[in-house]
Image (cartoon, rainbow, N blue to C red):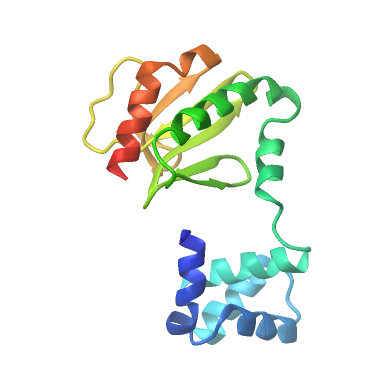
Length: 183
């Protein structure tokens, strides 16, 4: 079950209404902008920021015909000037799928989150010549290509910059496996 599914399932208990009931509230309010919806949910209904953000985002997606299919998000990330980076993404995914059937892909607008029980890596077409692989390797010292620090706004502990599919080598696969096993 994804984090989003968990939030939706917990919504009635945590906010007092199911998602479809919140949709009815927002339909009645006639609001379309994210900030307006957030203000209403937090101010008039006391909904926490996280739930208000989720309700607003899903409501607006639904109003626009639903979220884009996951494949479309990935295709958009590797389109145009970044098209040559797709083999790097494919190589990372091929390696990760060898770890087990419990790997979940969660494509976002600008990156793909790799999850198990929690996120263990992020794959992002960072520039037209580089894919950044963010890894959650708490307690692992940076070495060589494995850079440390606050990566992707703190969503990862380490990063590897990859400019060629051949750089998805034994080191990268071992770091990925280690992050997977820690998740």
